[in-house]
Length: 149
Image (cartoon, helix red, strand yellow):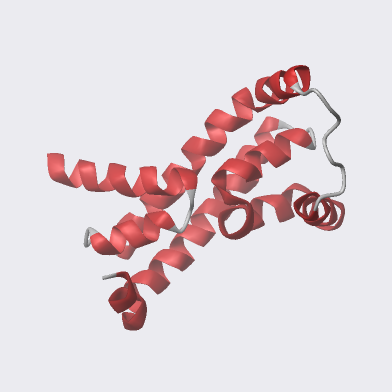
């Protein structure tokens, strides 16, 4: 029982920083693809929860300590603004696992002043869909398993 919980916790923690870490960890720990998907989604949502509530405080702290104006037109900023203009929070949420990472996605949503309930709704949906898809691929495609091991 305790080792199963530790496996779940390991997958969730791996997904808090980089979403693809959860499914890889799930394969290594020999969890089922559904267990891996659920734990990966929970790990991402933990990061989203924390950063959504402290994101505005972090933004204010950075702005207060910043000595010079930040660059407005970096490559990543342009990508984020284009996605925001075209798709809004839905685009940011669905590109968070593969592109923005669970850390940068919620910070980006907070920077665009998206309401917290919208952030949670779309990020949860995104985490579940990506978790199911990536976990299924990681568990069922054998050359990926061979590459991981």
